[in-house]
Length: 209
Image 1 (tube, rainbow, N blue to C red):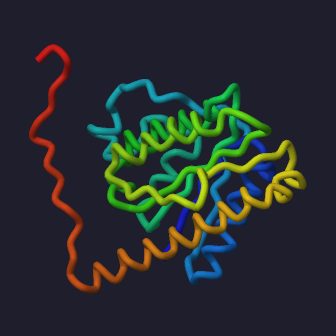
Image 2: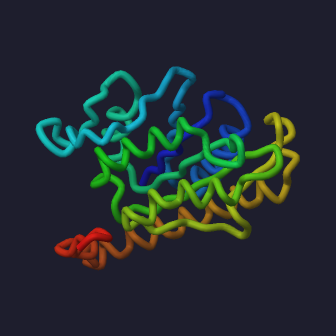
């Protein structure tokens, strides 16, 4: 079993990475393979709603100049996910939202019914609004959302401060333990012949009709 951890911060070894590393190490101790994917500091395109990924492009974003299509390919082989973001102006980084909009629009099938979680890293405030915004990608994709013993947030302005948030670090650890437990339950269910639920999507309406 493998969990992908997405770092939505442009800082490769910052506070968000520190929190994700705690999760990864705990998952490793539970026998779960992990990989932290860094979004980098280069520009990331927004989704333009062209729907090209739904047509001839076959589940790939039409923009191939960043990490999105590579990450969709990795998601095919993954069993679970953690999305990490710093807090900017009391909301998620624009980077993580742009990435996730395109990941889920182009490659949504690779995420469905797989457990996932979101973590937020902040100096002080904006964490709950950030978690709420990013979690919406998970809940529209039928993904079991993994929780912890507190909201999945950690505080600090530098990695050395982040590790001093003992409750935050424990929250990351318990999140990982819960993720490992859910993954093992899903695996046991597969061995017992329990199939993925059949999705019904034959009704679609807007506010006009």
